[in-house]
Image (cartoon, rainbow, N blue to C red; front, top):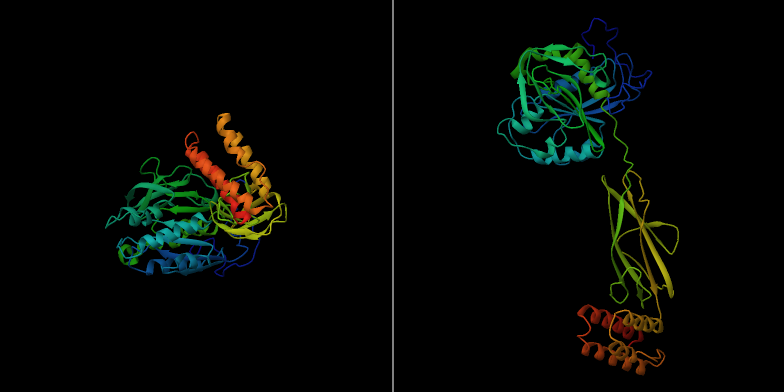
Length: 442
């Protein structure tokens, strides 16, 4: 930035200085801390520069790397990054990505994989500056392959609009456009219609409503689009690209990279769901229900907009501790129990409303009484209800042989009462009776 300007005082890179965070210079709806010419970055800004996989020349990306590393006012550490299968892992080492097309628009393998990884990086808080020809090559240029994951993160959409030797008009001298003047560029500009919620800072003046400098928040990340062909191939566009390495065009690129909006903090908590509860006998336990088993297993899961980091569990009011699904408990005392589980996301947010499950561990005698109560609540005729309950009266769990005999008689009576018992009612009673038999060792 300023490498050929008459106002330039020094060719040395400024690596120390005072960073002033200006109030009100943020991008309209996005409050940005803006670095202006003459103010140095407080720390090195790590920049990954790569062109989409649909281009053939590397000299264009190399020119942008040199342009950024030669900055007078910002401490950039820019590097040309290839497009490997593990692009997402590579980008974790950078603060900002600069991507652009060179006009060759040739197709190669893995373009969709790269687009998918870049989208995931942005959604998780990554920052991207895209330059001219990028939308054209990834969506509209030959061989006309559309890559939806890439288009999903671009601030502009619709058909490309191209022209030569046109003026880029600054419409809002704020944010990355601070101190940028309207300028004429003697080559192509590539622009499009801004998406809903995007902020337009510059237009071409050719077609109303089109954006040449546009920023957009994409979930936790942000993307800035610049219409000039900063990564145009010199073999195609020649010396006209030199005007982009100087003065206002140069300043625009550097300020866009230096002031790419910081990631939006993830403050949305995750959600937690208990999906299954099974006792030690392999029987499903209903919420608020009971079991004769002293063991129980919970299966659960969590959801989050960014990512789930783990879970914490608590039984009967104990301090939450790390856990994983499924989690089991054994040797539980007779009585009421409550289980809680909460999800933690990758940003450190914790589900403020943990999922909970209450149940009661009962004795065989209590289970028999619960079974009698269930019969009374089924709305059966007095004759049917009494004939069923009579088989359960006076069962002594301590007399195993007699208790098992009476439970078998009850089971036979249930099977004989379908109808008037419904299938669901019969299943409920049979499961409860068999659970009591299992606990007695019948």
